[in-house]
Image (cartoon, rainbow, N blue to C red; front, top):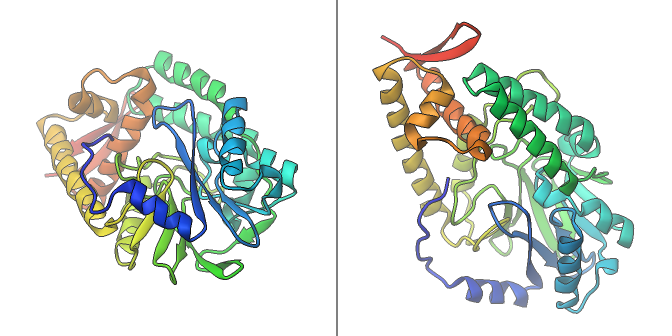
Length: 341
């Protein structure tokens, strides 16, 4: 969720200027979403590499081409496109770039089927979301409206054919640059951080963002198993792993670069702890659905934010249930959270 921007130790423009000296260019591409522009990254060398590509639209494609040309290269020269995760503001133009340039596409092996079967999996994600919304107290009208909106936004995405599958913990060789592939699920099931240990630099996608929290959205498991992800539980585990890394610079999928990831993660965890305690108090006052909890926290939740806030609440109740502080029961087809003891 949004939070107040804080001053960083180093100016963003200065940091990105230093990155350009090392052959890394940030390419902010417009999106139709509230998060704003998505940061794609061009890495010079052999292969000429693009990390993420932005949403599929004429406007985004035109700006991507223009910004690549501003670095002295062209879109047709791209040799490799690297995918950080499955969300449409990052993958929408990957297939277009690959077909135009003949580039290979690299992504986690376990995400390859999900990326290739974009339409089928988008339908399945919408079905899961509607089912969860109805079970957790969101009205059918709102659930169906969100499903229609999701279908409309789907035009900004596209199927991605992975030609260079990557393993968690493996290495992606980019000439004299070696990127360690680190699966960091949470914001999405396929979130991947690419770690350049020699330069103490990471390409983080949406794993960490400087100005907003990376909402751990509930999704379908990548392995095709039934049910839903425990997104916030997974995200906390991922953040704990990232916190221990000696990262000096993380180039993120949105917003400014991150120069103190430990402080940022500690701040995220402190915010999460406060929300955890607040949700426990709300449930202790009287049993209620996850959507009713969301309304208690954020007031009259906007239709477009209903599933996001639901994911936020369910993520926290997953933690409270693991700690045996709340439990879940069914009542008239709805899932109700109540205090333990």
